[in-house]
Length: 182
Image: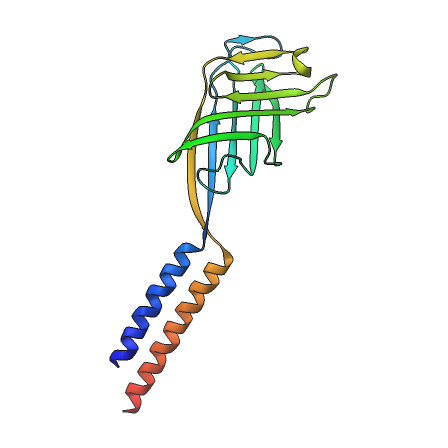
């Protein structure tokens, strides 16, 4: 009986230690830019850039996806999403983003050029429509990142945990059956 109790405790400890190591970290950082200090139509000085970046792990320098958006004249604006993983450069100190330089370009409005959203921890934020010919805005004060990290279990760790629990239940039931027979 003593051997079974020790085996059960050891199995449970191994199961718990294995399941805790099989988790992926989903890290989402949300950006809040400051109002533009300089703005030409269609931007106003009340507009700003906001967005989010998703990282595979805390401390990664390149996000798996980044989304930046800006309003136009207090109304619907435009958004640029990048999933190439090649546009962002982030520096972390612990769990905080301390330095960043991201430039996203895309033709989301139409016209003769590209729209640009640029956020930089040193230079500030820049938004441009049609390569700046149809509107340009600058915020020289940098925005802030709020980071939220959550552990997401992989399917294999959930299966491992469930298998371990089933094994413990089966062993417990068999132990009770042996006691009833004696």
